[in-house]
Image (cartoon, rainbow over all chains, first blue to last red; front, side, top):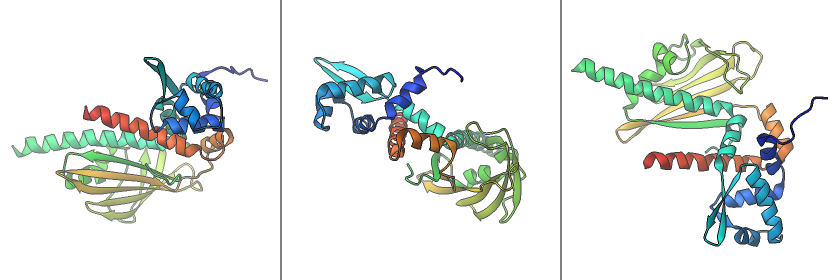
Length: 118
Length: 153
C-alpha cells in the first residue's frame, strides 16, 4: 500500500472542511470578522468547542486570527476557497485568462488604428 | 456569480466600442492571438477547429471542434465546444455577449452544459456532502471583491 503523508496542507484544508459545524462557522465568517464570543452565540456549543473548531480552520489555512487589544478576531482567508473554486472549475480560470489576453489585444489594435489614422 | 452549477460566467470590460471588440472576437487571425489558432469564419453553421495545448485541470485534449450556432454582429456569438479527440464526448456551449457600457463595452461569457458528475465534483461531494458549493462560491466572491477593491485603490 502506498504511504501517504497525512499532514499536508491539502489534507488539513479538506479535513477542516469535512466537518459540517466548521463549514457553518466558515459560512458565518464569510459575512465579516468576529470574536469567539460572538461566534459562540450563533451555535449551541461552549466557547472552548468553538475555539477548537477555529484552531482546525486556522491550521487548514481557511481562517486568520488578529489581535485587537484584548480581543482576537477571526476572519476568512479566502485564498484556499478561491483555489478550490478554480480546481472545481478549471475552465473558469482558462476563460478569465483568455479574456484578459483579449483585453490587451484590443488595446493594441486600438493603438494601431489610431496611429494609422494619424 | 452564477447559481447554475452547470455553467461558468465570466465578464470583462473593454474601454473600447463594441465594433472593435467584435472585430477581435470574430477575426480568425486575431482570435488566434487571444484564444487559439483556428479556421473560424463568422458564418452561421460554419464548422471549425481549434488547435492548442491541453487545458490544465480539464480533460480537453488540445484540439476542439466547434460550430457557429448564433451570430449577431456586434452583439452575440454562440458556438459549440467539443473535444475533437472525443467525437462521442460531451458537447458544451460558449456564448459571448457584448453590451455598450459608457464609452466602452462589457463582454459576458457563458460556458454552459457542464457535467456535474466530473471527478472534482464527486470528490467534493464525498468530503462535504451537499452545500459545499455555496461556501466555495462565496469564498470566490470575496476574493474577487478584494481584487476589485485593490484595483479601485
